Length: 130
Image (cartoon, rainbow, N blue to C red; front, side, top):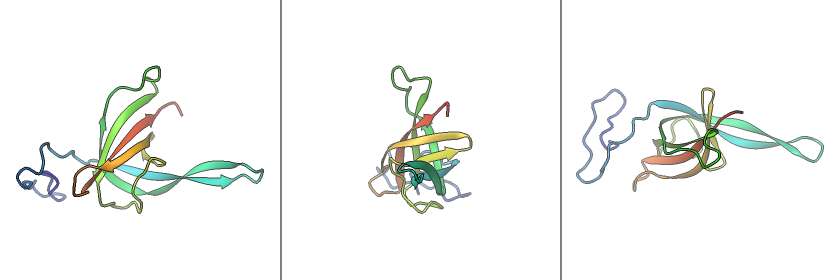
């Protein structure tokens, strides 16, 4: 189990002693993972489009206010997901973003959430006013 998270629909299972100090986040948000792709514009430049890679189930939590002078436009987030990708064929990285309906979360950093690599933690900012 993931620190007390059972399989879908199952009762939570206890984690081995000492393995988890905190309760695991509830992964209840289905996010679309997208990667940027550059397209040549025929005039020596390019435009950037976002290509969908698939969906992941994740927990989305605020992680503090926006940076000074930019607070209204940037909500900082911590997004936790299972380490083994579900529908998305790629592991998230700092060039990618998540889409949650009309909301866009630009990924800034990614690391493993536990020593066994069962979860990934993505630090992201919500893009507002686009």
